[in-house]
Each structure stands twice: as C-alpha cells, then as structure tokens.
Image 1 (cartoon, helix red, strand yellow):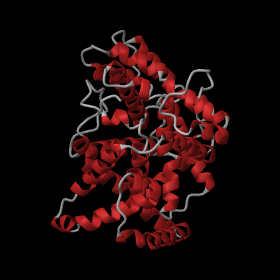
Image 2 (image 1 turned 120 degrees about the vertical axis):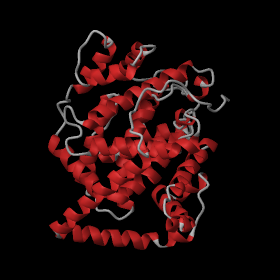
Image 3 (image 1 turned 90 degrees about the horizontal axis):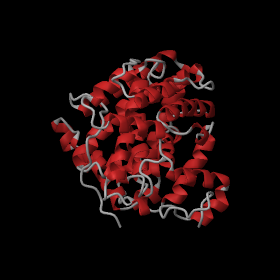
Image 4 (image 1 turned 135 degrees about the vertical axis):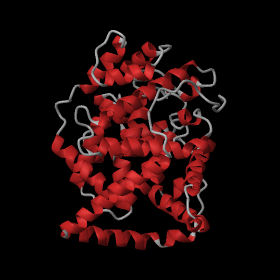
Length: 394
C-alpha cells in the first residue's frame, strides 16, 4: 500500500488497509512521519561530532553562552527550543505538576510497567534501545534516568526558563539525535525494513507514553484523574514534545485525541517480538534485583508476582501474554487494591491535611527512587560515543 506521498509504506506498518479505513487522514499523517527526523538536533550533533569536550560545549550553550566556540547549529537549536510557544499556559502546567506530585508510588508503577513496557511493545520502535546492548545490566540505569527526566519536567518550575526540566529535555533531544546519527551510519541498521531510526512518529509515540498512557494507567489503578486534569497533563507534555523535537503540527491538543493516536499506533505496530520480550524481562530482573534487605530478598518471589500482576492490569492480558508475562495469584487482589486507592482518593479530596501528607510522601518516593536507581552516579544525559551489539538485519 502507498502512503500519502505516493511512495510505498515502510514494511513496519502493519494492518495498513484496516488502519487507514478506521483512522483516515490521521493514519496518513502518522505514517508519513516515519521518514522525518529532527533537522535542528541532527545538525547540532553533526557540528559537535569530533569536537573535544562536546558535553561541556552543550552545557555552555544551554546556559545561554554565545561563544564562537559553540557551533552555530547548537546555538540555533537552543534558540528555537527556548522560544516559548504562545499557547503555553503556566497555570495548566502547574496543575499538571500537582497531579504528578500526588501520583507517588502509583506513578512509579505506571511509569515502569505501562509507559516503559508500552514502548517495548513496538517491534521496530524498540530497536534503538536494543542497540544499546547489555539489556540486563542497563535496565536499572535506564529506569532511573527515565524517572530523573520525568520528575525534572514535572517539577514545579521545571519547565520555566532556566528550569532543570528544560536542560534535561534538550540533552535527551541531543542524545536521540546522536543515536539516530550512529544508527544511520551502522551497517547493522536495516533501513529498508525498519525505516528511519527515532523518527517523528516514534518521538510522538514516546510523548504519549509519558502523558496519556501515564494518566490512563493512574486511572486503571484507582486514582481519580478528571478529564480536565488529563488535558492539563497532556498540555505539559505537549510543550515537552515541542522542546524535544516533535513537530508541533503533529501533536494533538487534548488527551482524548492523543489516546486515539495511541490506538492507531498500536494498530499499525505489529506483534511484539523477541526484543520486546527481552527488554521486558530485563526490566523485571532489574526490579527484582533492587531488593536490598534480607526481608525483601526472601519476599522476592511474591514481589515479582505482584509486579507481573500490576503490569498485566496496566497493559491488558493480550499484550501481557504476547510478552510472556505469567498469570499469578496477585492479580486476583488488584481490583480490591484499586478500590482502596479510590477510597484514599476520596479522603484526600475531603482533607487538606491528607492531601498535604500524600504530596510529601510522593515527593519522598520519587527522590528515593531516582537516588537508589542512579546508585551515586549522576544522570548526565551525555552524548553516546558509539553503539553496542544490536540485532542483525533481516
């Protein structure tokens, strides 16, 4: 089948005829995005290539320095990213920050077992991660760095000019561009079968994983997230999407429209593959190995059963079965747990004291999660220097 440009659709697009009939013009928009990258970031990493102390130059550029030592392409990227879109509403971003601020441990479950695992489901979108190699060893670090990124952009004032969330977002954007550059140069990247690595379609999908997929997961676990709160949270991530290099025209305006796009993306993704299962297994192994006390180690089996049950509830049985996640006894008590969460939510709405305690507990949870996961090694989001072993083409 041909795309909107008249060229054949990439082989990675599954169920094309049915998806086009169901989603119409949006199908054409998202599939056309499979062959577009992020020209500003691509130019910046190309200009930084081979430069000594490239990360130091990035830091200076992010701080607003305009030294001639900093490549013009890097300065152009910063200027474009720092230009505030006229549609950004800080009051909505503040409300979104408060929503994240009360998600706490539920947010941690959703981030790991719905957002990250949701990304692993894509048999082509997951390939850049597979090329990172050492899946089992890097899984804890990846989860910690992802948590660091999410907490930075969702922190109060995190997206204001000079905020830490802005700096980390731009560093992640440059990391993506560098990985894209390395993969395009690698003979092991099968462009004919897999298309452009880290393209606009996959970048948009990642924004959805951290926004509408996240808020949907909170609701599944019993947290009260209103339609307005969901839209505000997507508003925050829409701004992050623009800063991280997603074309503004590709981004919808509401959580509902984003959720419809998620359905479209799942429809054309194809079935999870062996890499999907390997990435998921590595994530669960990392969670199991996080046990630090004798009691936690003795209860590791029960913890694994609980985490698997939570993941199954968050992504659904069809995807869970495709990833090889077993059904266990813990899944039987999760509906009761969701009911208890809903009860706590009602109490929070009625009591300012309970709400304040919940926010402090949530902040402490995220701080401990990031600190424990990083294990004393700061998340620098530096440009990767090379690739590790990846899957063979074909």
